[in-house]
Image 1 (cartoon, rainbow, N blue to C red):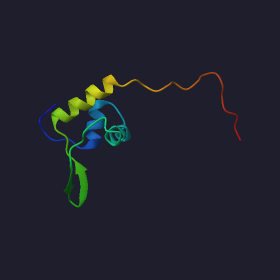
Image 2 (image 1 turned 180 degrees about the vertical axis):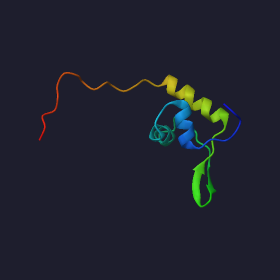
Image 3 (image 1 turned 60 degrees about the vertical axis):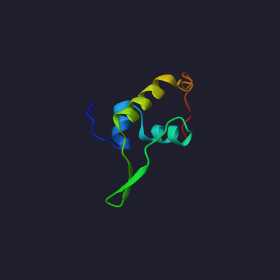
Image 4 (image 1 turned 180 degrees about the horizontal axis):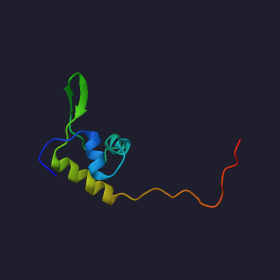
Length: 77
């Protein structure tokens, strides 16, 4: 990865999680996010390589939730 700053969407792609997951980790205090900055009137977070690595480590440390039960299908309406 280069030393350029990345957007939250780009970080999510690098880490392999949805953007909403990164936002959830931030909300829950599991991940510190860079402060927002205004770019062309839009608030964005600009992530450095170290921030991305922290997100990768967090992803590896967290367990996935329970898998949906298989076999039973919902009846249609």
